[in-house]
Length: 122
Image (cartoon, rainbow, N blue to C red; front, side):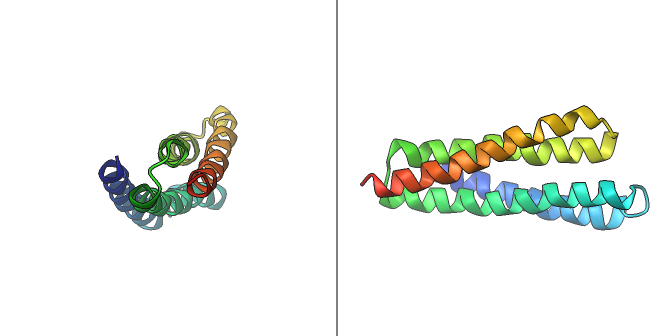
């Protein structure tokens, strides 16, 4: 499982860099400053949680507990919901996607709490 989360973190980090570059170069002239800021927030949080997945992979080598594994899945789901909804909102203008973003934030918070619980459980 640690290899999966390490690979997922690395791929997600690459995606965050690509999204950031896409936003800075291809979208800068196409999106309003507000929507560009939304897109950049998605890329920033994707990178934070790509690094969190790498931390989960490392933590699993030291504390292979169910909450640490759950943290990895929560970070994956949080990235899809949070960053994914922000990317889609900024690209499509579909405001209803903003309702999905807080769910992603809750998944991120739950992931961090699960990681703490899993590390302390051993």
